[in-house]
Length: 325
Image (cartoon, rainbow, N blue to C red; front, top):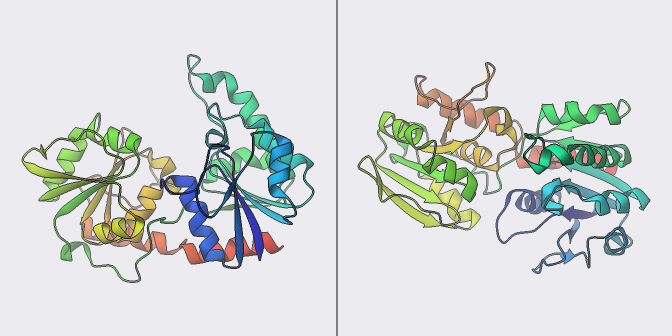
């Protein structure tokens, strides 16, 4: 199967959408090509568009018969409005499958997202109409897209772990009393900033003996209420995987309704780590994560079982169907 993946970026550095696309392409097998929507990108395994224009996009697509578009508006344009992308794909005649990692953003009137929402919504609608098959990571995103799909189904597929899926994982009680704070600088900044009291409470409740911080270096304390903190910086996926297998818990401050699109949450669940989620509001019907009070052994097992239902292999099989239909 020859598929051209259109992506905002490719690793390194390791970031959500590009790393997701690279892992999915590997699982799909066959001949995969990548077209990166950043003219300044340079690296192995892909080609960058010459410019952010419809003509340059079409030139980059070339003779590809099938395109798998990984759509996140802010990945392709700083304001989240990649009109050149929608225009180019609207003029292209091949088979388009789109996975919406984002649909559109919103915010208060003093944020640009408030004023740009109509444009972002129009671009998402154009891509939804143009695509033969659609997938997204959240049911709420699917609901936003359905008005433009004319009854076509939308596959709702929570993201998979982009740092591996161990075949076997140790139980919660068999692990070192280590807690990982893993992810991008923004997510970890929340953990060490406004959600630091939640992190401290979780560490104390779980009898944690060491906290490790993994990702782009940010300011972290030497200890948290007497528990040593060890910053490890950026690790390759295999290094993150080994670390998580040797950790009891993983902490993230993330809106619970959006956890299915978090590669951090997916990594914790795939490795049998107890996911500890801190947020100010929790939905009634929530995913298996720990906020205190419940039995951590059961929550860790439930999180791992939840993840197995949408592993990389199962999602690759679903994407093969969509690409070949």
